[in-house]
Amino acid sequence: MNLTKALGSVGGLTLTSRVLGLVRDSLFFRFVGAGFASDAFMIAFRLPNLFRALFAEGAFSAAFIPMFNRKVAEGDKAKDGSGLAHGIAFAEDALSILLPVLIVMTAVMEVAAWPVTYTLSGGFNGVDPKQFDFAVQLARLTFPYLLFISLVSLLGGILNSLHRFWVNAAAPILLNATLIAALLFFHDDLPLMTARNQAIAVTVSGALQLLWLWYACRRAGVTLRLKLPRLGPDVKRLMALIGPAAAGAGAVQINLVVSTALAARLLPSGSVSYIYAADRLNQLPLGLIGIGLGTVLLPTISRLLGRGEDAAAMTTQNRGMELALLLTLPATVALVVCGAPIAAALFQHGKFDATDTHFTAQALAAFSIGLPSYILVKVLTPGYYARSDTKTPVRYATISMGVNLALNLALIVPLQHMGPPLATATASTVNVALLYRTLVKRGQFVVDAQLKRRAPRLLAAALAMGAVMYFLNDLFQPYTTGASLIRWAAMAVLVGTGALVYAAAVFATGALKPRDIRQLLRSQS
Image 1: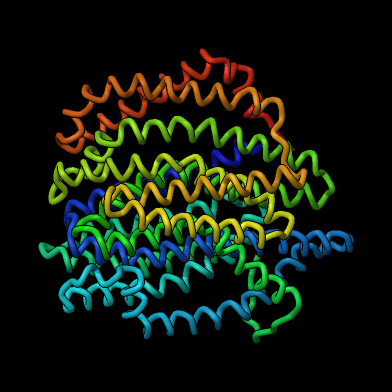
Image 2 (image 1 turned 135 degrees about the vertical axis):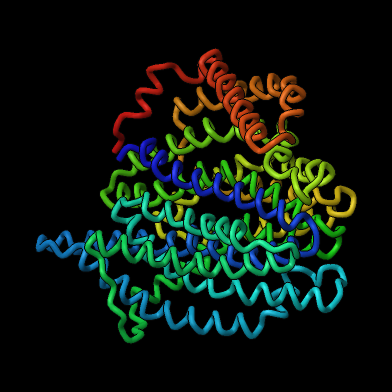
């Protein structure tokens, strides 16, 4: 499989979803602003987002895909064409346990909405009880999304195993499209009502995503039957792997929940929205590069290791890290240097003013320092999950969460809204260092000569781009708060200029040559 082309397919659709997410957030802040209504929705939306990251994009895929591939391989060895049938039988057994558990869990969450919301928000620093009740109502409206997105993760795992990556990558587009439609057609002069309609749209989008994946599975010849629950040995092993994988894959998201709760409890109104808006911008490259690489690398490395091709698996992981650095380093520098004009262009209109933009840009700079770490986690953890080791990542994730909590408590008062993002970035860096060190120590990852030569040159190219963009910022700033067409044009020119400068710096430093670009596009096994 061509790693670069597969990343382009998944990353392109993820980028489309993230761009629609920015459009959604831009409209949301236009109609709702940065205040209690927006903070309440962000808290209500935080748990579904957390569960999606932990389960759909993390734990379930990490545990399910290698086991599904093994079942298919066992069937193929029988040479009777029953490989996929073996995999589907395993998926049906998993569904028989997963569905009733999800139904019960959703019901419990609905009943326990008050304490769950309080835990996530810290009580909004003593906000009026009627306002807090509104936040609880929003949470209850979003909780059914957990059921839908978990079933989506099962169907998406099957399609990823069949190398139909694009189908699952396209599903989040339905989430953002639904929320945008709700904002355009169901916004209200009262911010609270607009926030309520957004919460309803979250659950509607979950149902639409499930229908999309179900249809795609039918087209791929995969139909899952509903069976009576059967806790067989394979399902027991799957459940044993999911728990550790959830903590390992979701360390960043868990850290964000801790940061959000502390911000809601200790910081002024609007701070949760600044952190949320900054995280949304930070998620753009993370979704394009990190999620795409993680999605492609796990089944690829699993297949290579299953065939005994350990050297090829290591080469694939080296190329994955190389792609991550090539795309992540300039994004990191750009978000730190150009955060203010980017935030202004996307969010500064309607009820979102210049002060909100300034604070959002500060939080974005703090988040972006950890962007390489967030993405390298996605590159390194498949090296563990493909070997069915979900316990080591969870140990390191636990350490990371401890670092995050300690730094949050130390930084949130002196640095205000910049404290939680900086704590999250630092904790993620600690997590990456531990994951990398252990893989190297086990002999399961060795940096090859090509990566050693290119990595420092890519860093030099990114810093050169940052220096140029720093001096160009003032030229773009006046255009980022004009009419919509002007601000979007300014954003396009800003991003395009940065990309051209970075490309020139990459070739000037010798990090890449034209023949290397052609090589990246060739097939890799």
